[in-house]
Amino acid sequence: MISVNLLLTKVITYQFQGSEYGVSDKKYKELKADGFFDGTKLYQKAIEKRVKRDYISLVHEGVFYILQEDMVTIGGLIMICFFALIIPYQLKQRLRQVIPILATTKTGRRIYQIQLIASALVALFVGILQMAVYGIIWHLKGLSVFWRCESWGIASNSYWCDKLSFGTYMLLYMALILLFAIASIVIIDFIGRTIGNYMGAVAVSIPVCGVMMFLMRKIYYMLFLITNDQVLAYWELYALATWLIVMLLFYKIRSKRWKKVDL
Image (cartoon, rainbow, N blue to C red; front, side, top):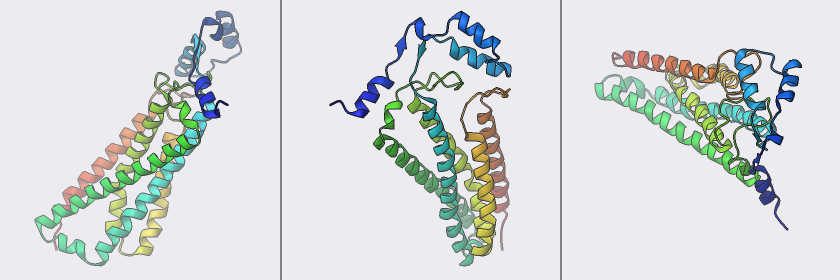
């Protein structure tokens, strides 16, 4: 008996060719008359591109929905994990009066910067590990058969990245989530080095982490989906770039101040 996974692989990765699977000009006019293309020019262009294709992919939109829900959830878990990893370590140093000692010498202040980089590298390793576990779960559940398919489902899934394979789309999704989270290390490190006790750190960390998770959900939910009210393509990349610039400026301000710190 042919296994279910093998059957899914044969069915899903097969792409039907031929105009009979496309949308005829008559059907296209009917869809336009019914208001199927109502929305911004960006949306109209994206939908028109879909319905005029001469082949279909059997990647169901439910696969995208699963990935999108999982990614924003995993992104939130990664943020919580970063807070739990970094803040206790920084607080321990502060409570043991290590930070004031570092501030007394040029070498100590250099170590301070190295610790921040080390925190980011450790967080990156943990984040990659979490994403790898997620990918393994996909594979064990038999969903890896979708990785070779093109990144688009039915016509309403108006992704700009429809030329990519779904596996590439997943990797891009994961990379952007990690990039947002790693940049947040600057704020997490600041909280750990500023707050004087564990209770205060918890009280500050909860709302700050909540705000970051909210921003992540707003930016990364339905990544690169073009909706009927959207006027700017790739807006997620602009939002991420803005976040990275803000975090970089915050890091520069802190670094400049730390170079002048002394007892």
